[in-house]
Length: 250
Image (cartoon, rainbow, N blue to C red; front, side, top):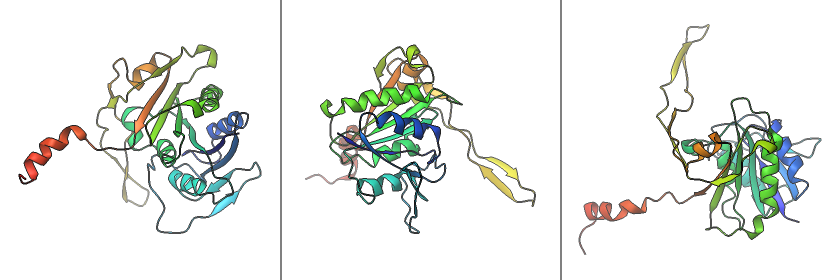
């Protein structure tokens, strides 16, 4: 049976994590290692300024006082007894579409499993106050059941976004590209009771690219969006022009 490491960025008590673990336990041997609190927006950060503490919960879950990437890094190394074949992150409360993947702790947790033989999966439930975690859990369980037959380029991550509807209302699956958002609004200043000015980072920008073929479009139309993400961020198209500008002729 395939061994799956499950993590998230919403924290060890998140309903999406519980739903995912319940579904995957039916098709895989699982281990759950998640942050001890909500770490949304942590991206690929590692905790390097202090040691990490682990807490073992009654339901078998393990929590760390660190980031999603910390959790998967520890799990992939087999610190807690299981060396996984696959990493699955989620179910995130809210979508991770387009530019969101740059900041998402959910996607970052999956990314930390990029060196394994099977492509890691990040799964999010699209909605402001999502309810249908069972739908996303079933979608992922179906993917995991057959994932050993999937052939992708090394270090590919699958970013899965599921509409927040009952499974019976899912129209199908679309393989998509990332859309784009507009630039987010500036930070919002507020004054605390002691007169100190503090700043809140604004939410994500409005959708700028929701054309057919994008992840935004698929989810809005009621389809599961699956986007293969490559970890290599090299802009190959620009290499020749940059070299012509900077490198001396041979």
